[in-house]
Image (cartoon, rainbow, N blue to C red; front, side, top):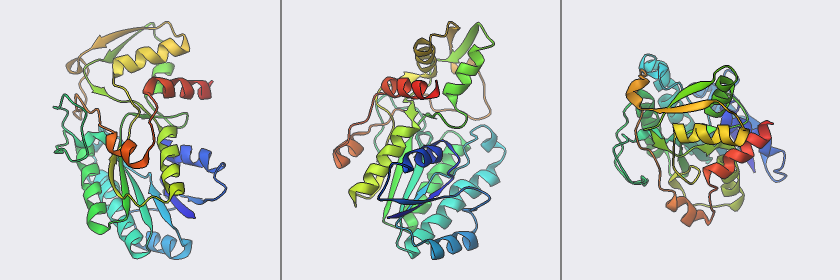
Length: 283
């Protein structure tokens, strides 16, 4: 089977590149902007006409949550128009689309893990654009897997784990938000799950929630990073209002993954287990 990966230089795309070396039965084309502009109908059509793909994994996204409040046009262009162009090309060329979305489609007012069919109400423009991207995929085709994920980190790229380690090198104390609750997700786990679904030949298309198991605040996450790395920087919990940002964040975005685990018969690692693996890979 042949697979097109867009946005392949990001965290998830880089993990897929890393894992592709172990996939003897799969052939990959890894692309990123400007090599392939997913907002260009002409470029996408040319790629699909020549590629003869079975799957497209769309990792391309505008993910600068705070900047999105000002750069709305650019955010929409990538997250909404790009999703639409890819989905329409996949439909035309009979390609299964695997599309990555976010927990930020929710407003954060729930107190229980969120299921796929619960009401969405983004509190920032990034979340709104990702939700609209989901809608474009669903409108254009039926043969798709959409995965909402959360708090991605990796050995590749810039992310929260690397930022906290870097800050600890120059500071004795750090203030970290303790009232935003979610589930940190190791991008390698998500990449492995995507490849497992492709290899299984599953046609259980639809929308799924995927994050590592367990619940944490950013404060909890930081404390775990420092504990596993033997870092002595002191971490102080603070409320969101003490660290204002241009874009609001949901206070609670823990997702219910039971649809995924029951449909595919796969367990998901706990975030603490995966964090240890990521930190070991970083050493």
